[in-house]
Image (cartoon, rainbow over the protein chains, first blue to last red):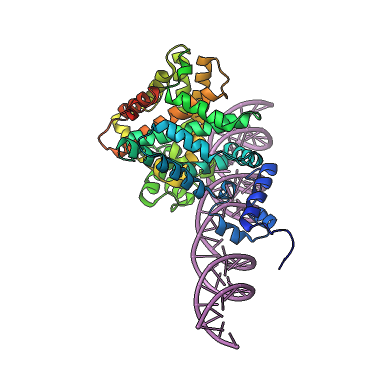
Length: 195
Length: 195
DNA sequence: TGCTCACTGGCACTGGGTGCCACTAGCCTC
DNA sequence: GAGGCTAGTGGCACCCAGTGCCAGTGAGCA
């Protein structure tokens, strides 16, 4: 239909923009999926074909995110220090350009504060944990479902989300720096507690 | 109405038994809340007055659980080694008698495997994290919402859930032992990775 | 022109969760 | 004992998330 008009932003991008905007201003629970769909110019039915759950509209293309993390971990190989590798991978995957930071902040603020999104996030985190645990298993020779791989995956992920929370709480802080602070504490057994 | 019959199990206990049974045999999503309510002899409406969400029927009296954890942490005082205190508190709160272990297994298996319950669990974990972070803050003099208290809370909780998963995976293992294994790794910066 | 195929939207249905109201049972007061 | 207050319960109706089914529709292709 339109021809020489604006580049006609892709439908998914429109949905995600609308979702972030509406959820931020009025709260996740207060905005029905239909309203997001309307704002993006698609039907409710199509919305749920794009995203299996309303919450997924906030996460963008998360599968690609996980795949990128997996790629970085595999590329690092099993012989480098495990925690440092995981930290670097987390940092690189979340190394956004200055221009994208406001959207990232908006997204993470929603995920970390809206209860429904907080709950849903556990399902996304499980995908990350699978990938990280697999890396640890490759490095240590363990079974990926053993205690150590699971533990390292779960606690590094805890470090990452904590770093995100700290980053959000301080407008002027740098995400990469918070990630490194958290990972350093974790890797050294929380030296700051031994004051 | 009934008089000298069976002690007439309390309604909540009936609900929780029915929920565990039905969810275990047919899956959380496949059993409507109404069916659980019927099995417990109450109405759907009353079910949702007892439990704000269907998932809460699986958790029993979780607020008491958290309160107990909080009490143990406060009782330990801020000067004992933080991680050891948290580990001991987790172990004690989850120190069930032999007779209660099957129910605990059933409950935890549901929570750790059913996606909807897995998601919901994040909200319960957040309550635990608040309490643990507060303890760390008392010990370290930090702000409870600072990086270190949050980090310790999140990663010890990760250790605890990982220990639960390992315990579930091995019928013969002991929960307390798994908890200590996980906390020991965490506290020492994952020495097993330095093979 | 006709066919296929992928995408879309509408419709109807299940089920979670909630507000509202009516009913009942205790319990307190006079 | 009568009237009233309160807490707990159940029924009803509603909103909304998510899904199966079917009917377009339009692009590509023979």
